[in-house]
Image (tube, rainbow, N blue to C red; front, side):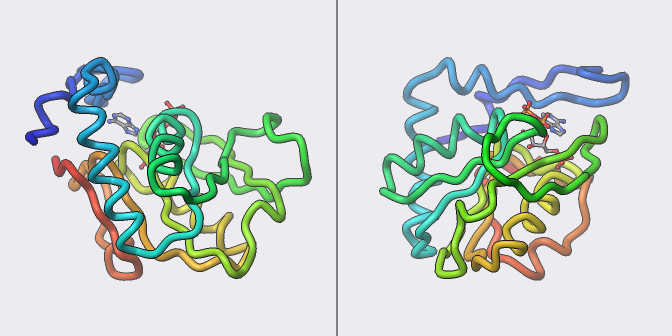
Length: 170
Ligand SMILES: O=P(O)(O)OC[C@H]1O[C@H](OP(=O)(O)OP(=O)(O)O)[C@H](O)[C@@H]1O
Ligand SMILES: Nc1ncnc2[nH]cnc12
């Protein structure tokens, strides 16, 4: 399936100069969304993952469906003040701002084999922060997957260190 046609480009959102990749048009199409979840789940199975880690909010939309299909545990990465137990925290910069992400201590164990799931890889700031949070728990990262990758916005370092898959490349 040609997934690209289900993503809508929205110029100058949320800031002047950013072309926002709107995934809601994909979510509005049940067949396309199912095909995406099936393909992303296949990657998780191939890597032999025991856990999926994803950031709010759009990452959750994909990750929870993939965790259900693959029977893996799902660990949440959230913005500050949302997770109730003791967390680790990392500050990061993304295409249109700076923020912090947290993951609860002990949600992952050193035995976990993790696939990280998110909708968009842009500058890579978010994914780098998630990797740092997982490394603090000494879990193994066996793969990273995105619905879409905006190639011109990030370097190639991620692909050098990890098995990375994107269903759509811009
Ligand atoms: O590669 P980067 O430049 O770091 O950008 C990618 C991140 O930006 C978006 O999340 P956002 O923080 O906008 O949160 P949302 O999912 O809550 O909209 C997207 O869902 C990725 O997580
Ligand atoms: N251009 C973009 N579109 C959608 N989500 C994003 N996250 C970071 N950059 C983005």
